[in-house]
Image (cartoon, helix red, strand yellow):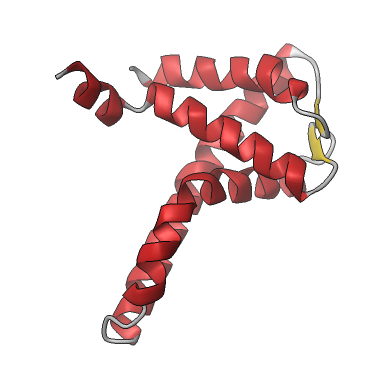
Amino acid sequence: MTIITRFALTALFFAFILPLIPGVTVASGFSAILLLAFMYRIASILMTLICLYLSAFATALTAGLALLILIPASMLSFWILPTLTLAALEHLMPLRLSFSGWIATSLAGLAMFVLHLLTDARILKETRN
């Protein structure tokens, strides 16, 4: 999928799917939704890079012993990274996105993970073959 298609699907997700989750409040309006989708994509890339570099630093610092914690933790990161990204986005844009607690944030992060599964090019190529 192209970047524009993924961006449009993220905006549609913010507009129609996330408000269905109890405890999630998303500002209405075309410009607010586009801004949320753009900021989510940027924050997601930054959060992934930060986690990647921190895990590499921890592995190098402990001569590989950190992998005993990082490998099992990576199995949970499928919903932790979108949840942390949405929590960071809530703090950056409190008038446009708000959550009533961590349960609502976790459910929204799980929904964003499903969106990632549906739009990830690598996963789509594997299912076609």
